[in-house]
Amino acid sequence: MDITPDILLKAYAAGIFPMAEDADDPTIYWVEPRARGVLPLDRFHVPKRLARTVRSDLFEVASDRDFDAVIDGCAAPRRDTDRTWINGRIRDLYGALYDRGACHTVEVYQDGRLVGGLYGVCLGAAFFGESMFHEARDASKVALVHLVARLRRGGFRLADTQFLTEHLSQFGVEEVPRHVYKRRLTEAAAERAEWGDPARVFSGHEVLADLGLGRDAAD
Image (cartoon, helix red, strand yellow):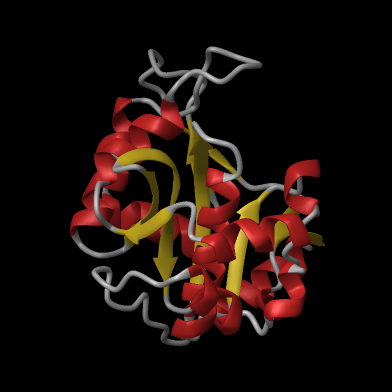
């Protein structure tokens, strides 16, 4: 079956997402975990050291500025492996979703150079995080903090991380059974949310305030 952007969105609505074995394998397979990683938007935890970094505005954080560069960064070899699940077909599919406004990016810049970021899919009031990368310390974490602030600001109800990892657990990500996840997904997908103006750049102070974190959170 030829996977189209519309089929891809229907798969997300059913709780399924695609992956590939590696960049050179044109095959795409569907994944439906028995337990799903979910980030409770109302209980997002920002470690104090990270809060200080966010508040310092060491990085400039933008949105929907350079999809190709973000997915390149996400597909680049990592320290622990030179394989990636992002192949050419996945790039094309998410690029098509990006063109229609169903996929979004968060970019992190330092001295004008892209040093981190993430991308994911929006469906109603649900956001599905796909991948993130960093080339500078804390860059992907800062991207995540800005993402959550944008999701809360826009009225999103579900933030899907696919899996629970040790890295994500520090932010409060929980693992929920498939049937619970599907119920939450159905409810969130039926609601409306707004990504917001991509051209609007928020300061670290504004982002922490949106998350309900005052100056004490970074002390």
